[in-house]
Length: 204
Length: 111
Image 1 (tube, rainbow over the protein chains, first blue to last red):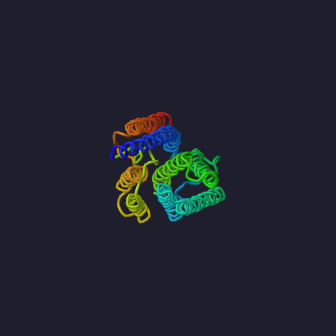
Image 2 (cartoon, chains in turn purple, orange):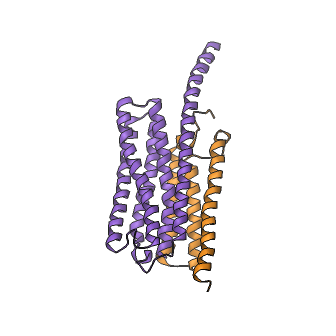
Image 3 (cartoon, rainbow over the protein chains, first blue to last red):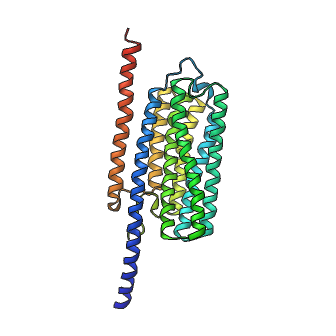
């Protein structure tokens, strides 16, 4: 009985050490994420300051299509959920489940990004380009910065899938997946603020 | 709870139930402001207040159900840095809007 307990302790110690390393990496990445929050807050502040600076150009009220934005929002929210499912797959060391959900997440993310690009092209045809007015400069800075983050997230997913193919569920890969999960959920949280304060408020 | 079961941010272990709850709450908190703006029921003030409340609520929902933040002792530094960040963000946002509103008032409508 004593021997059993000792064995268990040793195993626990090893596990504990790995978990602590993972925690340290995650905290480092968490610090990056909250700095990114500060970056976005300056962009939101600029947007708020510029929210009425149309310079007689086209206004967001004329251009915003809320049905379109609702679909974009649904894609990104669902992708945040499907990433959670991929994390659960990884927690159970279920490679097939993790890969399937990660693939669905990437497809949803790609759908979101395509819609955003389509919207930018559509807006620019209607005369809303960054040079049009202070408002549109702030709009494109904010929304495109979010879009670039999503693009980086998608590239990261691609790279990570190569890592998983090579090394499987190694401790490093688990940490990488956890960091990407945090990043992806963070992007959805930023999008909540974008659709609320940019699109919904702008369409009113 | 051993340290392998909780952790920082997205690293922590969730459950299907937790993610589904987060998803359903997020959908509800998205539909409400969209409905209010698209249908135009309710005054402008009410709609703006509803947008702000729903957004803040949904951010909190996702922090709890997707990022598994719970303010437990294992997450002391995560919680502390999050509160610090929220403070700085509010400082930047409210400060900028406050200063520029006064500036616009003085420059454009002052005479």
